[in-house]
Amino acid sequence: MAQRCILVTGASSGIGAATARALAAPGTALALHARGNREGAERTAEAVRAQGGEAAVLLADLSEAGAPERLVRQAAEALGGLDVLVSNAGFADRTPVAELTDAAFARSQDTILWALFRLARAAGPLLAAGRAPRLVAVSSFVAHNFRTDSTVFPASATAKAGVEALVKALALEWAPAVTVNAVVPGYTRKDAGAHAALDTRAWEAVIARIPMRRLGEPDDVARAIAFLASEGAGYITGQCLHVDGGVVI
Image (cartoon, rainbow, N blue to C red):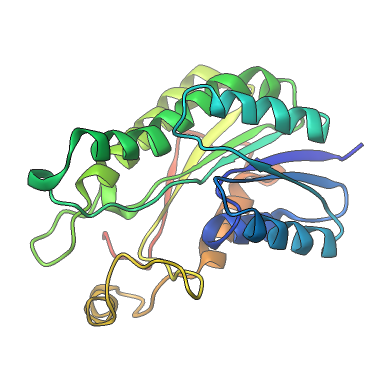
């Protein structure tokens, strides 16, 4: 039986895949979730196994009612328990409020905020019975970045702000049994071939505004998640750790 059982959502690419690799080790079993990109999730699983960990791939559309609960149940059954939940799945929507439809706005909330709520509600009892139990959610700088010289993501920002509020509420509710924290990535490089929210010229302007003068890498965020998921972070809860190169200072 694995020493630690971990569910990572959105693990087929980017931050989720990097997180799985950062957590992979002998004695660790990971359930790797993807909405539909099984091929990407399988590549992540191969990387986990190459580092001595165990991996199972699970598919689910977390925007659907009942899907997050099923995913938690399937992960616990596949792994033999659940010690860590990393809620990472999501997407960016920069549609202006005037152009946002009800359905488009709801999609961000369902995929990001409601998914975390449903995952946490289902996983809570399992985590409380786990070993050094942790919940780590992935928020975004878009919940903090409102500037006239920067792109604003209204639907995404609303959902991610809700994620951070829920993290703090859960941290109080679940203490002292389970720690609950969030990482808050800044502009982060996408995998090659992945959809980008901005064009090349816009990215150049973005980099000029980042104090560290570069985009974040998925591994930058993954290392922060791995720390918050570790036994060494046992006295940290209710925190939102910005991994953004200083973009929201």
